[in-house]
Image 1 (cartoon, rainbow, N blue to C red):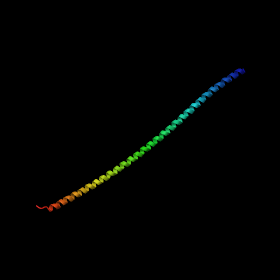
Image 2: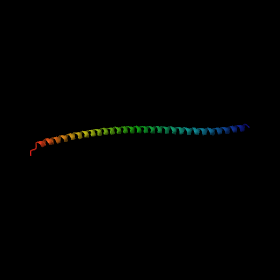
Image 3: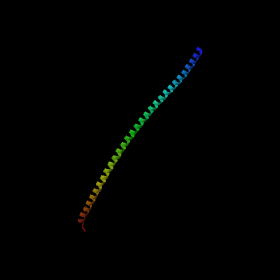
Image 4: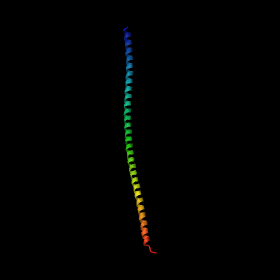
Length: 110
């Protein structure tokens, strides 16, 4: 009877050993999966930072384009104002030329 008890005890120890090995394998697999998750999280964070930097660079470029457009608009307004001044000056010159022509006409001899 002691032999049977020892035999059964040995079988249970072997079964426990199999379960322990299975648990150890599962723990190792879980550890590897956790490492992969951590690596993926780090890659995702790096990618996210790259996206953020690209967005900031795009914003800086957009701001620079906006400044350039505003500068062009200001220049266009100055040109338009200058054109108005030239039109007015041209009208004055035309009036003076007409007056001068009339004055010269008085001195013409026939």
